Image (cartoon, rainbow over all chains, first blue to last red; front, top):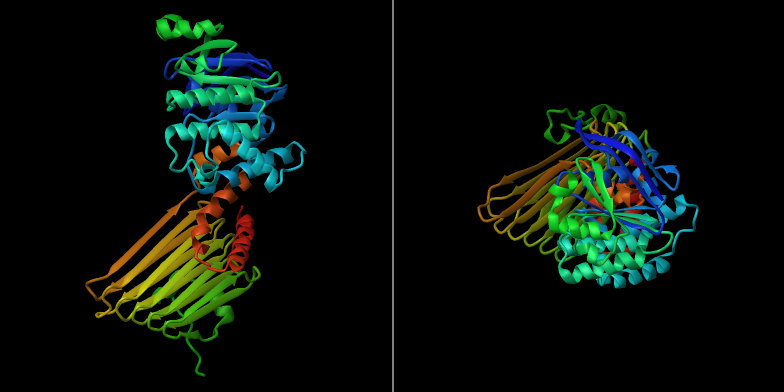
Length: 247
Length: 250
């Protein structure tokens, strides 16, 4: 589903990703762990197409299509979802209006019929309930006045509604208390743990991986994947720290 | 009728005007005079969407009687030069409400010019103007609030915000206060900004193409200008016209 080969990039003239390669097949959940400043968020933003994250070399393909040539909204329509570490507040724009327009833009780009107002509300209710979020919150402006945990939960409601093929979740676990972590973990499993879906979890800590069991764990250090293993690698990292294993 | 001289830029209320365009239609009609009787409520919606080569100059003078209210909403978006001037005089306990949007592109010059005269005590006024400007357009709000010596307990508010879609566009915001009473509240705020790039990327990452993402944010930006139109159908009509005008800027 996702094939990254020898990816390099620069931000403000500084090399961040230094030849990163990674393959994710449909049905798989991968976790990327690593120390601060290793390039984890940069990888997420680069795959999402954030302006300023210019690729200087290598390739990234999703289902055989060149991801790097697509604009951010085209990547979304192709099935990519980026869960933000810091979801953005947008005053005056309601979640429901924004999500309905987003979903229907994606559907039009894929030559699918747009959802009617009624169909959309039904879908939104179902996904909000899955993540234990009150519909009233979805009527409010995007992320405005949401606590850190509510923002992360709202990201997962968005993911549920948009139903992507590949989700890249950047520190979705940060800011969550234990109860919210369980709900979000269960949400990720319900929405994305399917044979035709895939997830790339970016995280500092092992604790989310207790709820979303990864098939592969990678260590990202200094702009490259330095080690790959199974779920047990995350536990080892938790015990030993990155310093030993990243080298 | 004796010929009136064309205004010059030395005239404060015309300093940002397009005087060459004005000369094409000079002399303009005299101001429309409106008197709101004591206790009454008057409302007016002005949608200025003249064809692109036209010059549209409107001037209204409103006297708001004791405990009366006047509510004016303006969508100023058409013409080479579109200027809407509103002069208001408030009697005791009266209220004036203005909600305006200036949406311009190309080489348009669009203005909302107000003079609000708090001549008597206990009157209130509130003005909200939102501008979105693209290309080489100029959008100006000049708002003068005068508070007479015995107009105590005056409460006058001015909120002016402009969004520039291109660095070549110009926004002028000039709230102006002339206060002779000593127990009054006159709040005024003015900002000029650009669309938040982080928010645009966030919206794009969910599948919204850039023009749609911008339209959504701009709709939210100007929403405050028309929020106080009481009649739902009327409000919807103006908002629809504003959204259509916004889409032309993108």
